[in-house]
Image 1 (tube, rainbow, N blue to C red):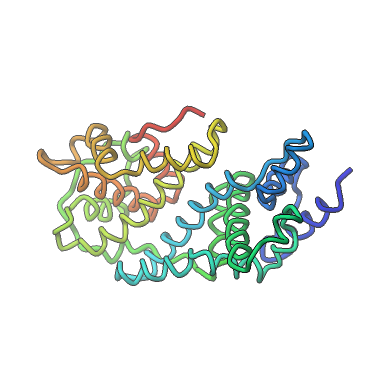
Image 2 (cartoon, rainbow, N blue to C red; image 1 turned 90 degrees about the vertical axis):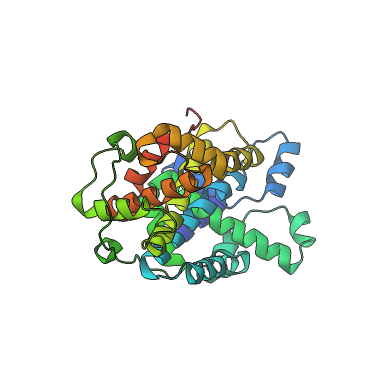
Length: 305
């Protein structure tokens, strides 16, 4: 029989804007973890009970939100500096906390009374931001990437922008193997892939920069999902692994080895990494996150789940 807390959480999830219904008991447990502060987990551990907290889901949800924001903004705006400013405003803790409070999510947070009594307003805001990220991570874990991205955009007031492939001038054709792109590239995607690989000083640098932002968020979410699914790492271990994979020089070495035809002799690891991210962005724009994520998984060493 469900507890009153679980029933309240199920009701919150079922209402707009989340609209998440029909959860199994196991799925509800994932969302229960998403609203559980570490202080309550520690308190329950002292009583001999294991109660998962939101830290691992927050790690995953942080990447879910970043990808949703990057994908939407890079399709809607041209200037990379403007995109970065808007992105930082949207993902800052104060804004995420306001979103959670607006949808009433603060009412279902589970936290030790002692910790809550000693919390200042800044600490409360930080927790609210963490919980929003964890909820997006839970949606990703339970309902998948597309549902999670759609929800994150809705919560942050974003719309999915247009496919800007038609706006890209032609560039010299480049060879990208099916292994690197997880399948053949359509004609519509070819112009974006060529622009992505044209080099940072080419006439395509603005398009390339936007694609690289999307691709960076695809790679981060792919890595985050892989280490989250591994289950053997805590939040600190997951963060450390993600930082290692995302580090530009090391990433450039990996992708240069995976796809040597894409990178001329003498290409620096940093340029190779940015080119690789831009190609991922092109795949995401044309074919969606899944195709781009598959390509990312082909080129970087991820833990076996």
